[in-house]
Image 1: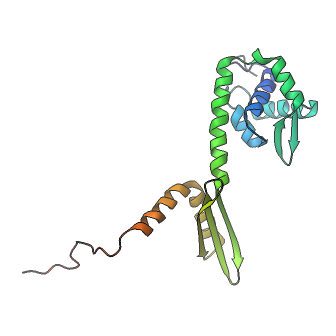
Image 2 (image 1 turned 90 degrees about the vertical axis):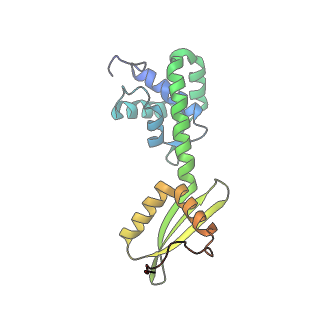
Image 3 (image 1 turned 180 degrees about the vertical axis):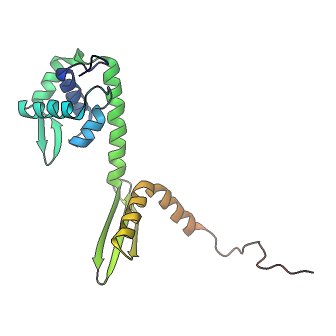
Length: 186
């Protein structure tokens, strides 16, 4: 690791992992954890992986179902060396955790799947508020490529699509368009 920033060695990186996991609010995937610790930008993927798996082997981090959580041993170590990480690093880590947690909550509220129903291919897309389903769209599609496009667009724009559907459903279609349908000379 280069000698820049506040994360200077593997031990600093391990404490950063423990600090992030202690603030994550629950088990997270390795990829999400990497996103949250990428605040000092001095450790590469291999250094992060080595530090992480070192914490797993030592019992400071527990892995269950592909997700990681800080163990009691990790909490004790973090508490004993609370000042190991400067306050600026802790502040950046907390911001990173909040940003990743917000992304994870949003992703958990948007679901898409494509299934064969009878002779048809149907793409189902839904959005919830975390508790209740707010909208579900089911559309026949012509092939898997079209299904993938629908799913990708819905995942990226679920809120905008919800608002567009709501606008379309609330529109007063009884009001005629003021524009003339044809021009005639008088």
